Image 1 (cartoon, rainbow, N blue to C red):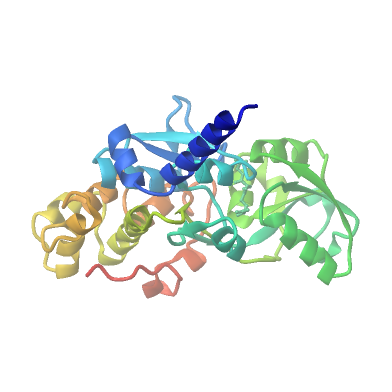
Image 2 (image 1 turned 180 degrees about the vertical axis):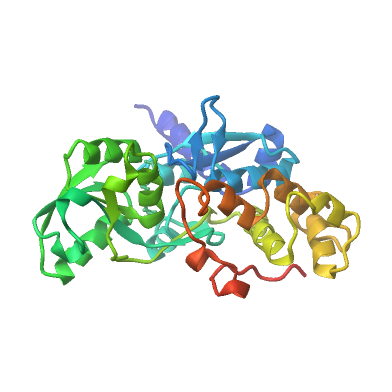
Length: 338
Ligand SMILES: N[C@@H](CCC(=O)N[C@@H](CS)C(=O)NCC(=O)O)C(=O)O
């Protein structure tokens, strides 16, 4: 190959790397759409409905960001990613943000160079077993075959747990949750292990969820949250403060039902700053004054998104637990809007 062709190819590669690290908000505005990376399908968190419309708790983050930036919660291109493909999709610029049950870890920040803008679900890794297996603790799983998703934090946690307890297992590697569900139900593995929230969502989709049990052990910390590329702080701020707006809205009692009324005059000055009727927080982000109001209207505040998609009155049935507001003894805590 001649030298100028090689040089040309290298320049293009460099330029696209640069394009992927700055100016994301301008790209999103010019495109008129947010490219949001989600799972390939996990009901309650992110899945297309019968009409192909994506819905779920993580989808709610995508829609809130689109509403904050573009004033339109439907201006989102949902890009399904697997545990393996998600980081390449973000690094290459194929997606603007990844909102897909991804655990904030040292190596994903420092080595892969991604910025986690916050946590939208505090989770931990669990085990799902058929009740007929007759197992009541993960420590009884010596010699078990375990379905495990490749490219996830769950692989190392699993190895650590079995090593610490001096027991062995045989991994059955799988790529997607749909594949895990199919293999597990077909008996190709005795156990399915992943984030406990993912197990609850998966079990809810079974024909007979009552025939399966979550074992009591939670073997890791899995703080899940949206992430962006390092190097574009302006974009990181937009996604971070959109998530914080949903969290603060719940704390201050701003809901999708009352946000319009609150925006026309609130007693609490922080509510007025949040909703853009006082101060210029939107302008500081490079967005319109009503950016947070639009984000809240998109799918509701943090608590509304939780209850509607994964809460105790849904088939997934998750309690708020660690994901309660700090004012209710949980870990969900937004820095102040001032
Ligand atoms: N939180 C872990 C695991 C995330 C993960 O991939 N979970 C699976 C099982 S719930 C999933 O979301 N699958 C959806 C899919 O296959 O698209 C990580 O960040 O590595």
